[in-house]
Amino acid sequence: MRDVVLLAGLLLFFMAWAGRSDAKIRLLPPSAFPELPANLVDELKHRGCQIPQLEKHKRSNAIQGEFLKSGQAGWAVLCTTKKDTSLLVFQNGSAQQGVAIETRPNGFSEWSIESIDAPFLIQWQAVFDKTSVPVDHQGIQSYIRFGDWNSSGLYGHSDEGTALYCDRGQWIKLGTLIGN
Image 1 (cartoon, rainbow, N blue to C red):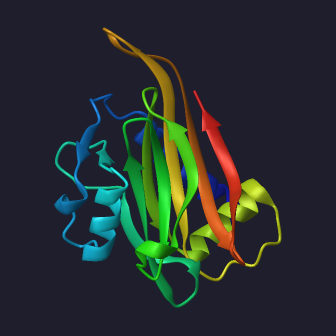
Image 2: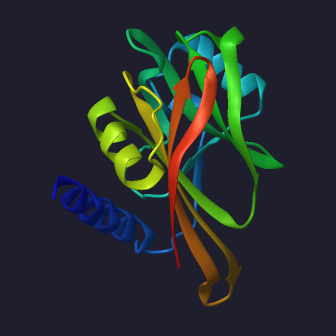
């Protein structure tokens, strides 16, 4: 029964995210995020990053959490450059230990990330993945809307929601939910 409730909640959240208005994506400089450590702001500027924003009045896509292992804080940031957008994860807030775990070309997708806690990941895994990867720290929820734009809006789109988790230094997908 708990799996059914979780699945229903995930589907409602995903549909609400996917159903938002298709506003133009805004790009903010890393300096617009005072919560980011100064060394990461400098590294993101050096990489030519801007951080994509899907909502008009809320900053997003720069998140802090224990993404690599329990008890070790880090940052995850979407970095849009002239050619692509990457999901970067920085271990311990160290600019030297930043790694791109996913990269997508610009121009046809909206991308959003959020942190998710271990209990939610365990439930997600039970419903969508059925693996036995031991989960003991946070992961990253990645939502992407793919499509092509025309003068009247988005057409030919699909949506993808994925739970990303770092297991002993390797990033894995704990199931993907795809919708149209």
